[in-house]
Amino acid sequence: MADPMKIRAAHHAGMTDVKILMAHPMEGGFRKDTNGKVVPAHYINEVKVWCQERVVLECLWGQSVSQNPYLAFRFKGGAKGEKMRVTWSDNLGESRTDEALIA
Image 1 (tube, rainbow, N blue to C red):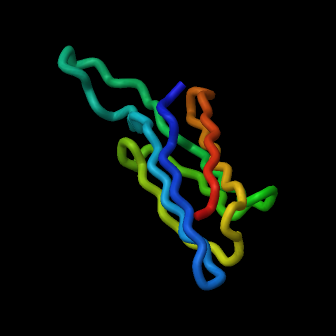
Image 2: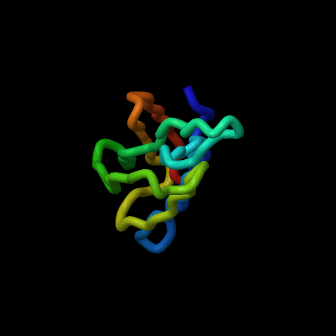
């Protein structure tokens, strides 16, 4: 399993700012290694973010997202102390879920 995600969420003026750093190789399947063999594709294809039990972001990614992706967004709502949950899954069937509290 991959390293834990770094999740920061801060609430102010009715809005919650979320910043997420995910550790993932994000190989597109086009690059060749030093022996000339194609490095197999291995990339995140779905990300979901919940605040309490409400989905606040859902996105589908492809091969063009860079290694160790950084995701930042803002949503209306949330409150200090509420739980944020972030889940990603990749094209090889691996997944990761991490949680953080809104500051």
